[in-house]
Length: 185
Image 1: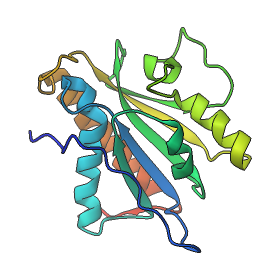
Image 2: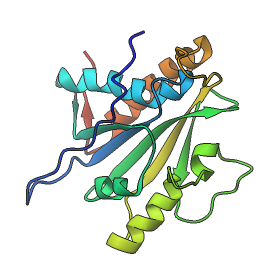
Image 3: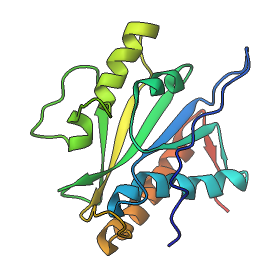
């Protein structure tokens, strides 16, 4: 499997009056750290669909981690899905709705709870959005199970299998959205 370019890609600045795509899918992770690449790899797969004209109404973004600047990417969205690797997940993937309230640490992967000066948890991103822009768009975390996060490692076999299942689910989900259109070949 080829690795995506490790350089983060940012949403393009919109000209005044241009409306954002209704759906934003953000892949979070470091392509150089084994299964941490799950988010960016999934975005690369979706990009192939988009390049073929089969994924309209969806904007794709890949970055190493959430930052406060990502609050700007949420403006004018109807739905946001963040894709990230999760250790110790009991299923290939799990979709977790993110709320601005504090998340119960017993039922959420570290990506939901983590906070430091270098990253921002999804619920903190929503709180920041609310303080600046009002009610945030619905945001879900698509956590994909991974088990090997060593520097320089490739995706583990388990993570690759989980990625297949999660990608198929996400493509079906995007097809069902009234604003986004994914067309199967």
